[in-house]
Length: 92
Image 1 (cartoon, rainbow, N blue to C red):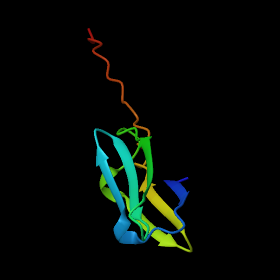
Image 2: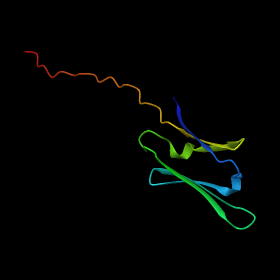
Image 3: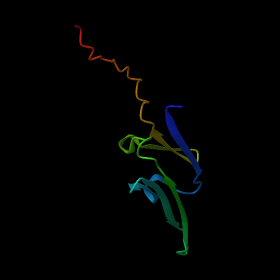
Image 4: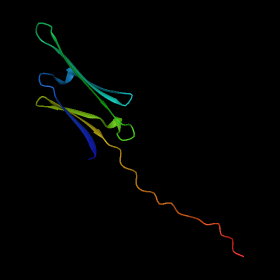
């Protein structure tokens, strides 16, 4: 997989009512909406992101049919490095 994908049911919430943030390698998703009489409905989730594995700047979010999908790209794995060996043999 090239990315971490988080899906959440947020039925009843609109995009402006959802806040997504990253702080100290933790992804926070928070939503709050009020009904007609002023009662608040809140959702809160947090996810630890390994900064060695994920690119925080790549986070994207989309809402479709009441489902929030947050995508965080993984850092590419480093290519193997071949180490050349030298010798210090003195010839007589």
